[in-house]
Image (cartoon, rainbow, N blue to C red):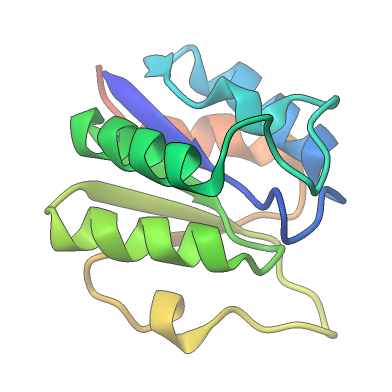
Length: 136
C-alpha cells in the first residue's frame, strides 16, 4: 500500500515530532511516500524547490497513492487542498485530529462524508486507528 502522509509545513512545524512518530507507525502498514513531512530539519520555509515543483510533484505522488493520511490538528491550507484533491479522485482519506478547548476542526473536513476523522489524544493510539482503517 502506498500512503501519502500530509501534515503542516508552511502552516507551522509545531507538530513535527508527532508527525515523525505517526510516520514511523504508518510504515508498518505500507510505504509512506511523503516521509519528508516528518523531517525535523524541515522548517516553515519548506523545501529547496520552487512552489511549482512542489505542487506538481506532490500532486503526482497523491495521484499515485492508495490512501491519504492527514494529521489535521494544525490548520494548513496545503493539507486542506490535498484532502480536497484526494476526495475528488476517490482516494481513501483518514484524518487524525487532537481536539482541545481552544480549537475546532474545520467543518469542511468534519462534515465530509468522503473523509474519515479519528480523534486521538496520544500518538500511542494511532496504531489501533491505522489497524482499523488501513489494510495492506
